[in-house]
Length: 243
Image (cartoon, rainbow, N blue to C red):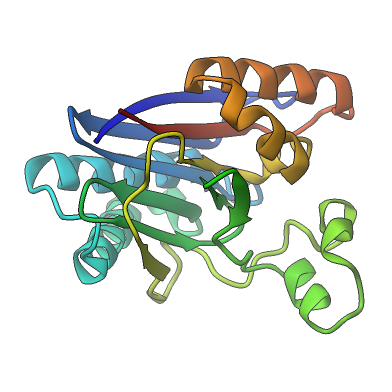
């Protein structure tokens, strides 16, 4: 199995970009990480960059299989530890933290992990599925039946997170291992600045029609049509399995 992969990150309507995306691909495997530094904490762009770099460099230096959940979790733990080290060495960085959503996919399987509200979607057999559960107060409101899942994008607590990477305490990521992707299947890993405007029905319609670069171009066109003033940074990695 071979994979196509493309990434995109944009400042959107903000002054700075606190998102970061990194990927490493070989002929038959991909590791990608998407992180979103928390805007409430100055310098969280550093946390996002440290996390994404640590995960992808760790994979590049010692590749883990797509069916090894524990090794995948260890990459995320290493990212947390690197952020903690940075905070100890930089007095102004005491509050920085980030979301993380990452995946490794190869012929053995697809491992996905996340903390926060950056998401991972899987397109498999013609159907789109959200693999991650937002760690946010808005998602808690959904679980309690107070709002519909479709309302989460506009909920007042959509950006209030219940879990982050790089905080005072380490919380292990939610992690799943899925069967290998088949030709035409793939993943979309993205920050909330992307999924706020690009809906599930958009991804499901466009994914089979487009290669990863075309898909990201279409996503940006959708954001340009729907965005509000001062829209958030938006970032995504698209992975597609091919023959």
